[in-house]
Structures are given as structure tokens and as C-alpha cells.
Amino acid sequence: MKCALITGGSRGIGKAICIQLAKDTDYHILINYNNNKTAALETLKAVEAEGNTGDILQFNVTDAEQVKSTLDAWQESNKDALIEVIVNNAGITKDGLFMWMPQSDWQDVINTSLNGFFNVTNHLIQKMLRNRYGRIINVASVSGVKGTAGQTNYSAAKGALVAATKALAQEVAKRKITVNAVAPGFIKSDMTADLNEAELKNLIPINRFGEPEEVAYAVSFLASQKASYITGEVININGGIYS
Ligand SMILES: NC(=O)c1ccc[n+]([C@@H]2O[C@H](COP(=O)([O-])OP(=O)(O)OC[C@H]3O[C@@H](n4cnc5c(N)ncnc54)[C@H](OP(=O)(O)O)[C@@H]3O)[C@@H](O)[C@H]2O)c1
Image 1 (spheres, protein in one colour):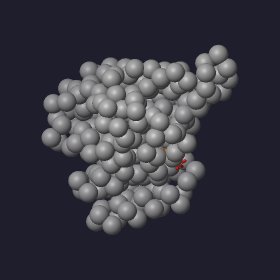
Image 2 (image 1 turned 45 degrees about the vertical axis):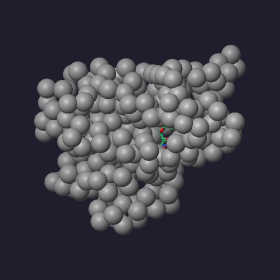
Image 3 (image 1 turned 90 degrees about the horizontal axis):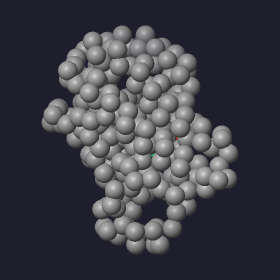
């Protein structure tokens, strides 16, 4: 059974990625969530409506031990399963001016986007290397490419994720594993629900926020065999914001 694991698949962009991969591939979809089981189950229902199978998997990506024990227990009860695609999507923001930023806001954001990438990918990559095929897709951000005021923590986490993408891509390319990132701009989700689109859209050449599906299309392409010669790349999905 070939599988695609999407961290933070319960809501927003991660949910759209789970559904798009169900539409475009035969993968068994592993939907990770942290707190929101109801939302994860809704994603699973949408995946099944596309004719695919899937599982919901609760773990906090910041907790390396929990990541390991949950994935190992799942693998133990699914011995024939092989995770071919990892989408590191789980992420949070804790915005604020740097001069007033508590260390906990710095650490929480880095622990989720950057250390979450390490905890999940580092645990799964040995098997992927042995299998000599894989797709790793990291959900970065325009903030990690150009930097955003009020988001020094988030920009640092996503910028580091972009650099890690480029480095790891070079390490594993010979084993037919590609590692790429997408860098979304303003996308409609719970994360951006409190932002004023009417005002902020003036900063965006396409003049609107993006839909989660508009990120998921690119992720699905990068997860496919068609993207076999693209690695270490960052695809900006931001409606034309200069980055
Ligand atoms: N929306 C945007 O404009 C935008 C722009 C650029 C980049 N991004 C990036 O895109 C990704 C998805 O964002 P979104 O807008 O879809 O956010 P969202 O609607 O807030 O959803 C966040 C998802 O991540 C999960 N999550 C958060 N912390 C987690 C943890 N510690 N362990 C496991 N799962 C965790 C949540 O699970 P629960 O449901 O269980 O809480 C949820 O499924 C993030 O990495 C974000 O930084 C978003």
C-alpha cells in the first residue's frame, strides 16, 4: 500500500492537499492532525468521496517522540505500507513586533514549521532511501522568501525550511527522491481569517487572496512522477507578490 502523509491535513491548505492527492493519485492518504479530530475526519470523508482510502493520525509535529511512536505503531499494524510522499504542511503563526516578542513565540513557531519538518522527515527518510523513490514537499511561505515585518519568527522558520529543502534535495537526489517547497502568499484559511482582505488585496497584483486548492494543485504536481526532474526548487504561489 503506497501512502502520502500530509501533516496538518485537518484544515486549510493541508486539507485541500489531501483532497487533491485523492483526486489525482491512488495513494492511501494519511491525514495528520494535532487537536482537531472532527476536522480530520471530515477530510477523511472527502478523501473517501474521491474513491481513495485514508487514515487519520494524531501527533504533534513538535514532539519527536510522539511522531516516532505514532508512525511506528501505524507501520506495525500496516506492514505492507510505504510512505512515498511526505507533505510537511503543519504550521502556526505567532505574530508580533520582534522587540516585544517573547521567546516562547519564537520557539513555538520554529518548533512547528522547522523542527516539525525534521521530526517527521528524518524519521521516515531511511525507508524512503531504501526504496529509492520519494517526494518531499515542504509548505514554506512568501515570508520565508522575502521576510515579513511582524513575522520575524515565522519568516525565520520558513526561510530555514527553504534552505533545508535545497540542502536535502542535493543529498537524496541520486535515490530518486525529490525535495521541493511551495511558498504561498495570502491564502484563505483559519490562519488568515482575521486579516482584512479588502485592504491587503491591494498589495497583491492578482488582487485577491488565493484559495487553498490553488496551492494544492502545485503540491499534487510536485508529488507526481511528472515532476521527476524538479528538485531543490521553491514555487511561489502568491498572486504575483514580488519575492
Ligand atoms: N494561509 C496562508 O496564507 C499561508 C501562507 C503561507 C504559508 N502558509 C503555510 O501553510 C501551512 C498550512 O496553513 P493553513 O493556512 O492551512 O493553516 P490552518 O488553517 O491554521 O491549519 C493548520 C493545520 O496545521 C495543523 N497543525 C498546527 N500545528 C500542528 C502541530 N504542532 N502538529 C500537527 N499539526 C499541526 C492543524 O491541525 P489541527 O486542526 O489539529 O489544529 C491544521 O490542520 C502552514 O505551514 C502555514 O504556515 C499558509
